[in-house]
Amino acid sequence: MCWTAAWPPRSHPVCDPPPPAPKIYHWGRLGPCLDHYAVMGNPIGHSLSPDIHAAFARETDQPIRYTAELVPLEGLTAAVTAFFGAGGKGLNVTLPFKQAAFRLCRRPSERARVAGAVNTLWCSPDGVFHGDNTDGAGLVRDLIGNHDTRLAGLRVLVLGAGGAVRGVLGPILEERPAAVVCANRTLSNALDLGRDFQGLGLVEVCDFSGLAGREFDVIVNGTSASLAGRLPPLPDGILRKGGCCYDLVYARLPTPFVQWGVRQGASLAIDGLGMLVEQAAESFFLWRGVRPRTRPVIERLRDRRNQSSAASIGT
Image (cartoon, rainbow, N blue to C red; front, side, top):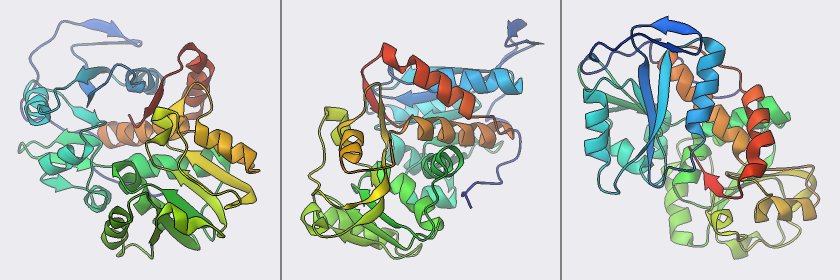
C-alpha cells in the first residue's frame, strides 16, 4: 500500500487574509482572487513545479496561481514568513532548504519528522507552520502506479545517505521489502541514517566497497552523482537480471546511473521525473483536498524534455 496522508483538511486559512484582488480569468474560472502557492529554492530557474501545478489546477478547476521563488541561501525564514504574511496558501521547498524548512515547522507530519526534512508547508489559522515530506510517497506511487513495480518482498539497495535518501527511506520501508541496504561513500553518514530509521525497520548500511558479491532486485540512486554526470562507484553484478534501477535525478538524456542499469540488464531503468510529478500531486492533495491525475502530466513533460539537457533533483 502506498503511504498517503489523510490530513490536513481540505482548505487551510493562512495567518492573514489576502487583500482584495481584481477579478481575473484563470483556467476557466472567474473569481475574486487566486490562491497563491509557490516553490522556493536556490537555484530555482530549472523547476518544473509551476508547469506541473498549473496542469493540476486546469484539470481539477482549482483557482490557484503557482510561482517559483529564488531565495537567498540564508533567507528562507524571512521568505517563508513574508509569503504567508502576504496571504500565501502553501509552499513547496526544494534544494538546499528542506532541512531548514523542517526546523521552521512546529507541527511536522510523522514522515517529515522521521526524514528530518520538509518539502511542503502551510500555515494554520493560529500562525503555526505545518510541514510534510511527500518525496517518498511520490517515489512509491510512481513505482507502483506507473511502472507496476512493488517493493514488498524484494531486496532494495539505496545509494546515498543525504537529504534525498532521508525523504524516501521511510515510505520504502513501509512497503515491507525483504531487505533494505543503504550504501554511502562515507560510512559514518550511513550509520547515522540506519540509527535514525531503525524504528521503521531494519536498515543495513555499508560503504560502496561492501556491495561486491551481493545482489539486489531494486536499486535507488539517491546520490547527487548524476547532477555532475557521474556514476557512483558500483561493482558490476549487483543488480538481479530483470531488476529495477531508479534515479531520483531527472534529465533530458538518460543519466549515467540509468545507463548503467541498462548495461546491467535492468528491465526497468528510469529517472525521477515520475516521482517529481507524484510528489507534487501529494502536495496538491494536502493543500486542496483534491488528488489530480498524474500520468497525462508525466507524459507531457517527457515529450518536452528534449528541449533541455539540464539535470535536476527534487522540486
